[in-house]
Amino acid sequence: MNAYLTGSFQASERRLIFLAALVLLPVFFFPVLHIWEMRMWAPQYREGLTLRIYTNEIRGDVDKINTLNHYVGMKAIRNEDFREFRFLPQALTGFGVLALLAALFNRRWLAVLGWVAFTVFAVVMFRDYAMWLWRYGHDLDPRAAIKLPTFTPPLIGYSQMANFKVLSMPGPGTVLLGIAWLLGPVTLWLERRAGRAGGGSPKGA
Image 1 (cartoon, rainbow, N blue to C red):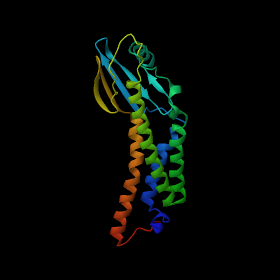
Image 2 (image 1 turned 120 degrees about the vertical axis):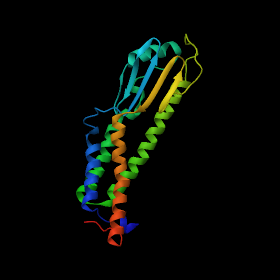
Image 3 (image 1 turned 90 degrees about the vertical axis):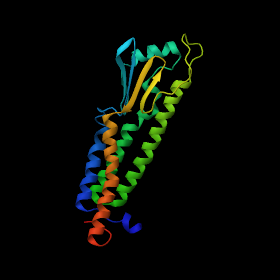
Image 4 (image 1 turned 135 degrees about the vertical axis):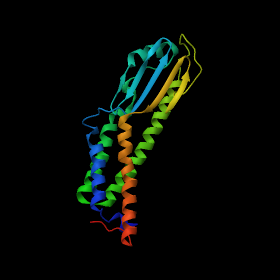
């Protein structure tokens, strides 16, 4: 294991690590792709309402949804309530820096460190989002004009909430981040294939 971590990449694997860095590095400077999207339809909103979550803010029909929330006792959706927005772009760019350093200096241990940290971070962020959805539908104001039973908006997929149909799904930003994450296992698979073809463990270039 120690020999593997201190080894170096083949040229093709280094290009994949560069690609991962290329996906992650611009997040802090250009957070233009949303990472999650929630769409809602009801008889009075046939055109639909949309929430788009970016790495640093929530956009879309926030004001309209907050007006509806007020009547049913849900908390208003505010960027200030999401502590993740204060560090999410920086953290993702930081993982990109680790990938870039691993590729530039051809150090496998840096790439492994970045991939493991990226994986743990993604799991924690996914859990935080799930917990926010649960609190959103359970922490209802008992003095609200319209009483609703507690609920949990869908983390992913379709759900019916009162007279609203709700669809929640990853955005293009998450797709790109997923591709960056998958480059880690792909790189490992390429190394193992090269090792089998060469009759031993790949030593790198």
